[in-house]
Each structure stands twice: as structure tokens, then as C-alpha cells.
Length: 235
Ligand SMILES: C[S@@+](CC[C@H](N)C(=O)[O-])C[C@H]1O[C@@H](n2cnc3c(N)ncnc32)[C@H](O)[C@@H]1O
Figure 1 (cartoon, rainbow, N blue to C red):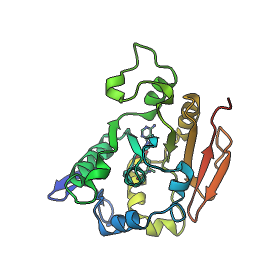
Figure 2: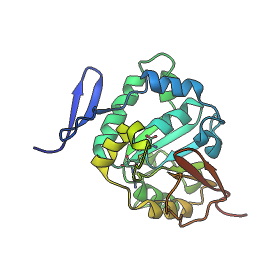
Figure 3: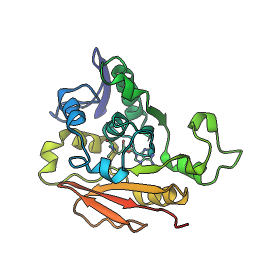
């Protein structure tokens, strides 16, 4: 028997860990908790909004879409968000959750600003940095050149420790399913090479992490910190 199973019911897909009693993982943008987060989100309460400088029309590339919560929040604030996710299971769950959100009053508009691709961001970023005719497919990617994004956002999977493990049960399940993203540094270097004017990287608040590109400014919260690299290239 395999440990993980993707199942669907009337409320969409869910991922269950059959070796654990933890409740299954669902992506639901209309859950009461998430709606509450959207409603209360401001630049004081949400460091992601501050570090990205979220504003209507801002073009954001989210290289690590995951459960889509950050991307959805940014889109809710008016950003145009291109989401990349390499896990087929996660991308399937996300696409379904976004489709379901189109039918929810108050969220439909937000979904119009989300554009999801199931792909490895390393390929996508490589093509942005070096748009060779033979490897680059503008129609598929929805962009035409390297500086098409105002901000590139990267939130790799990191080990969940201590108290947060109790609170973030869903992230725990996700981590068991996907493992830790060991190629985060490579992703940052590739993002840097695109010449995008702003790079934002989410990392654990504490820990031995050292970015391959030193941040210009860091916003630190209780469990995570947002490292901003901007401007990426001086004129
Ligand atoms: C910590 S989760 C991101 C959570 C997300 N920010 C949210 O708000 O739900 C990291 C996700 O990034 C994805 N990921 C990591 N490296 C990637 C890559 N190179 N390309 C595409 N997706 C990647 C993983 O599969 C995982 O789903």
C-alpha cells in the first residue's frame, strides 16, 4: 500500500497520508480560516505584502506555488500572479481549487489574476534568463522576455520544527509528501540571473540558511523571514 493517496469528493481533491492520523490536506480558498486571512491582510500583518510591495497590477512570478495561499493573497490585493508548481499532485489540487474559487462570490475576481503552470521553475527561469528561440515558448509561458515580472517570489519547502509543527499540520503532511526542497539556492541564483528588479525569498526565521545572493533587506516574523534582493541589478 502506498503511503499517500490523492482522492476527490464533492469538495474537491484531498491528499491523505495513510500512515498518519493527521487530517487530509485540502486546498480551499473559501475555508473560513483562509477567508479570515484575506479579510485581515494588510502590510502590517502580512510580511509577504510588504516585502513584495503588493499593489494592483504588479506582475509577480511565484516559483513555488505549493498550496497557493501566498499567490492567492497577492492576487486578492490586485497583483497579476504567474504560479509555477512542479508537483503534478499539487498542481492538480491547485488548478481544481482555483476553478472552484471562480464560483465563490468575492473570490471570482481574484482568480482572474492567477495563471498556473505545472512546471519546474528552474526550466522556466532558465528560459527567462536566456530566451533562445528553440527552448522558449512564449504562448505556453504567457510572457515574452526576461523582465516581464516586477517581482520573483520563492518559498521553498523547509524543515518544520518546534511549536510551528503543531500549528501547521497541513504543511507537515506536505513536507512528508514532497520532502525538503534542496535546490532552493539554485532557484535563487537562476531567478537572480533573469534580471527581474525584485526578488523575495521566504525562509525559516531561525536556522543556518545562507542565501547565494545577500539580501538588501530582511523582514522577520515569528516563524519565517522574507529576504528581499532589490534592486537585483544596479543601473
Ligand atoms: C513551501 S511550499 C510553497 C507554499 C506556498 N508559498 C503557499 O503559499 O502555499 C513549496 C512548494 O514549491 C514547490 N517547488 C519547489 N521547488 C520548485 C521548483 N523548482 N519548481 C516548481 N515548484 C517548486 C514544491 O513542490 C512545493 O509545492
